Image (tube, rainbow, N blue to C red; front, side):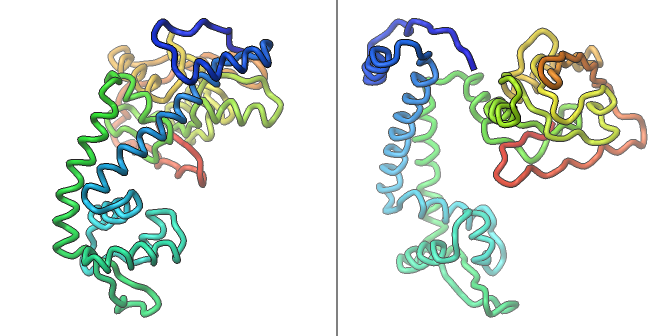
Length: 292
């Protein structure tokens, strides 16, 4: 993807600026704008990890311990949460979950007992001490995260929360019947099949009979504009849908194949009486997918 080289923004120079200067001397032919972003994101990730771990350490925990406590508190099943469920929720192996449970049990934060319905399984539950610790550490954790995000505007935060994807639609906006891959995956998928790179939302699937389907949007299309506004995120699409609701329709421009642009007029009016919106398809395994 071609990006114009741009001068760095005004402000104090940092270690990334020095890195970029070295790159520019070695390869002056390369556009280094993505390096400027990714390198800083990597440094931000280290800062975030360090700050969060410091908060957990104040309460005698680490990140993995807190994740287990949060999951147990969130699920809050009578009698305890099965270890198999914990494995799925935490996306960890049985052995790793066992080690975490044992460590928390040694501190009296959880109990581990045999599942009366399946002796091959174990039920894990928070103890009163575990509940009390969760109630103390969680406000401190949220306060740390809020402090780390203090430099971002509400709009910037809204853009960031859409990166991974969503399994459910908004619930308040008209349901279009689209399963979408975000911009970074759209670029990768098109590149893999030999198509030119585009910034937009790749249509993974279209529900039959849905608003998007009736408008002519197809699987494989890349949605690049909603009205005159470019579509770089699902947040931008949702904002365009919301803004166009009073008009009753929204024109979405899609690129089909190599470079054919198609305008689809999507109905945003209420569903006819008695019509039930189609069910949403689940996201693919490991995929960042938005259902809109």
